[in-house]
Image (cartoon, rainbow, N blue to C red; front, side):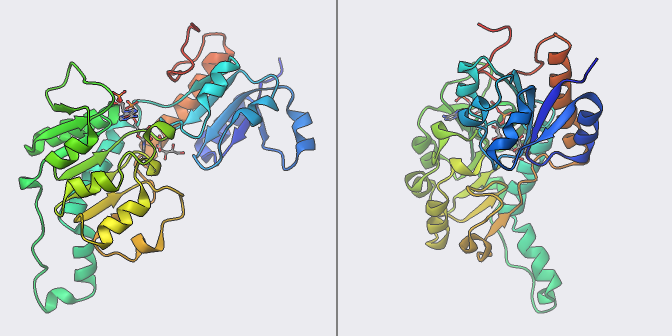
Length: 317
Ligand code: NAP
Ligand code: 8YV
């Protein structure tokens, strides 16, 4: 029996690529329009990376497309509504990365508050020989507002409970099963806490949710940690707030135009910047890759998708 044809979009990691090639006939994105003629039998897309947008135009060029399996829980680079309207299923990789990304968020939070990268640079530059490193702000006195209390947001909150700090959250709806204070207004939460941890998804609905007004409300001791999506924070407003000392610091794993990071941020010593490494351990990336492959394998075995996104439920409505 011939292997199902799939299209690989984005940078597939070697672990995933070798397994995909064993199970499927894998095509690459063609360089020109004429190349799409060879893709008329493509039934699935294995998507990785969030740079290229997988939109209705690309879906329309693949008449046999049935399923898009994303490598990652965030799927803001896939037009899931367009997929839904064509009856195409979209899957993502929830849960397998939750704890890893929450660990990283705590690392970024503590690193930012206690200035760990700056202290490391200080020692390496020989400055400790002159005088001790200056005192820093502390997690002990902080109150944290989580933006997007989903799977990862809750895992961050669980960790913060052990640190004994007050926790609040903002999202579109109050959650019955959590003991944290709910703020329907992000602005009101920012006025009441001094630290925001954003784990909200990207996309138009959350674009620039954390804006100049929110940053001003956070105040001069304010710290913003973002492990969700760069688009959730108005980066220009964040840079201005950091430059004008309207807030104290920021710890960022995600940016608006990755992998390009504004020179103004790179030039600031009072921020901690990471190259989108929230899920980037061997253990977790392999788990994500396996779930992406399992979704495709299950689909082609006629058993449906394992982890469809909300816009394309299974069984179909
Ligand atoms: P999730 O379980 O779906 O949680 C998302 C949360 O965001 C939900 O609690 C939702 O609550 C809230 N939310 C959605 N739309 C919102 C809006 N318009 N305003 C305010 N809150 C909103 O997803 P997850 O598994 O925790 O992942 C969250 C995100 O983390 C992903 O989408 C991805 O962008 C990012 N991520 C980053 C990395 C990294 O490497 N840095 C790794 C993995 C994931 P309501 O429905 O109540 O609004
Ligand atoms: C990945 C992520 O780095 O899952 C997500 O939403 O942002 C990360 O785990 C990314 O998806 C890899 O392409």
